[in-house]
Each structure stands twice: as structure tokens, then as C-alpha cells.
Length: 212
Image 1 (cartoon, rainbow, N blue to C red):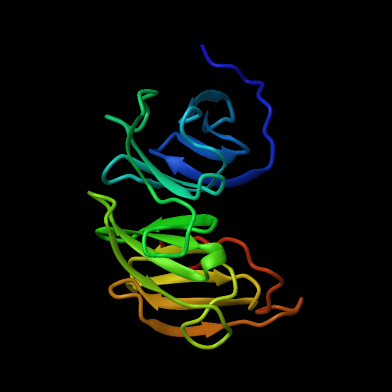
Image 2: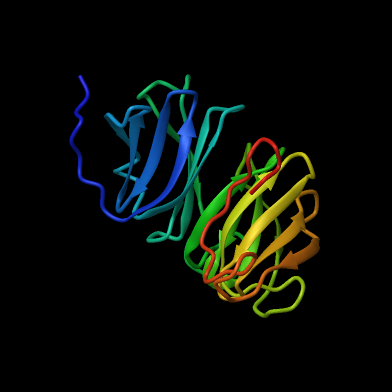
């Protein structure tokens, strides 16, 4: 039986798991709920330090979790999306500035064969192979020009345009990159409260019809 009462402290991200459940990153754990809000179970509480970003890959039944306390990304698998039997596939990263290491990995997205991590305090995106977790490439550096970030925070993949949309938090803009090679296409937005302007944009997602 499932409980309907559970404490939620500082929720950071949310992702659908299959058609009926959703997961919430919650302080030091990831909680899974039914579509009507009933708590079901917890994933990775003995592994994940402080989860931030979540992404569920429906195609592969993989759950990606960024861990800002341990400066890692954890990947869990399940035989079916509605199972409680999640197992760790691999964990990658540690605190640092070289390739494959992180300084507060905030959010994560999956493209066709890679996953992309917002390496927040290193002001870059890092790309990894989904199957192995092996580092592929890094793009970005500190700054406000094209190809630069000031705390990249959220990321999503638009399959219709093969693009990545990234919230560039302290530059108060959205950056658009090629998902194929990470090259920068354009950016838009600036600080303000009117339509089309931003004040520390945090996260982003894209709908099936291409709106984000």
C-alpha cells in the first residue's frame, strides 16, 4: 500500500515516468508519486546526496539524476516504468574543472544518443554517451558573448529542430545550440519584467508542438 502523506522539502525538478507516475527531486531524495499525487516510493536515497535535475528517458527506461552535493550524475534503470525495482547503472563525476568533472551539475537533458549536463559553476555544458557515461565534449566558458554562459542552469532538447535550449541564468537569456555538435546558434532575452525579458531564468522544457 502507498502513503498519501509525505514531507517535501525544497523540490527542485520534476519529470514524468511512463504515463502515470512522476518523480520529484526533494532535498536528499527522489520521490515518486502517482498521477493523483499519492506517494509511492523513493529512488536512490542511499546513493544520491542532493538531487537537482531529473530526466526520464522513456525509450530506454533510464532516469538521470544530477547530484549537486556529490557533483555527480547518477543513472538508474528499471525493467518497466511502473516498477519500484530501480537499480543503479552508473554514476559519473566528482568535484572539479576538468572534462567529466562537475561544479554543481544542475539540470540534465537527453538527445538522440547523448545526455547533456548543465555544469553550473563551471559555466559550460558537458555531453556524455548514454550507454557508457563516457565524456564526449564540452562547450561554453564564462562570459556574456555568443558561446559563453554565466551560470547555465536549465536545458531541454527540441527534436523537431535538433536544438538545445539553455537558460543562461545571470545573463538573463536563453541560448540555442545545435544538439548535434554543441555549436551556438543564437540567444535571446535580457533582464527585465516585460514580455520576452527574464530575471534569473532557472529551468526550461519543450512541448510536443515546439513551444518552450
